[in-house]
Amino acid sequence: MDSDFRTRRGRLRGFSINRLIPNVLTLAALCSGLTAIRFGLQGLMSLAVIAIIVAAFLDALDGRVARRLGVTSRFGAELDSLSDFLCFGVAPALVLYMSSLKDAGALGWIVTLMFPMCSALRLARFNTALVADTPPPAWTGAYFTGVPAPAGALLALIPLVISLELKADWPRHPLIVGLVLVLVGGLMVSRLPTFSFKKGRVPRHLVLPALLGAALTMGIMVSSPWIGLSLLGLIYVSLIPFSWMSYRRQAADDRTMHERAAPSAEVVSLRAVDSSAPPRE
Image (tube, rainbow, N blue to C red):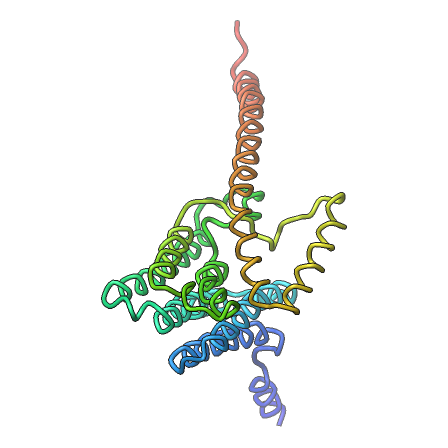
């Protein structure tokens, strides 16, 4: 009887609900990305953009939930990358193809193919950096290498978003959409450092202006979501030069600190060698 009880107790063991929550959020983001493709095929472009935004929100949430619950895993990271590729690489490219680039013929399809490829390359580079033999300095955690996939997808959708706001067709002209796709794809695979707002810190004297700016942004998003989304994209692009300068400044400080520490380390090693040498006659 005791053996039967232990067997039943062993069967009840498994993953806790906390371990499943981040993966459920990732799967919800994947469903949202697939739904965006469906809306795009049906010509419901505004709903397609909303579905991609929901996927971006869920993508930002699942990693934070996993870290808060202490249930990060390699499986979750791989699932998140596959979801990001579809939601922020394939879905926006297909939505933009159905809305404008299909009128450009074969060239429009080539540009459409380019964007998911850039997204895949960017995600592959990010995954290989996670398992690097020599971890980077801690301060590099405040930066991404290139534009992350969710931000790239929202930047690529700006012409379509402006078209929805103005109720005009010229912003979604194949030439404009194709140029934006090429530029954003180049930013995604570039080596430019961009701010990672996951680990960034706001200086104490900028807390109040940051809160006021956030309140103003939320007000714009509520009253005119398409204009607010476009402004967020433009603000993000305008921050890239500042992130590049901040990265270079911190890299220079880190290099200077190591150069100052190197002579003292050499002196310590020389003293150790001298003390270990046999006494002279």
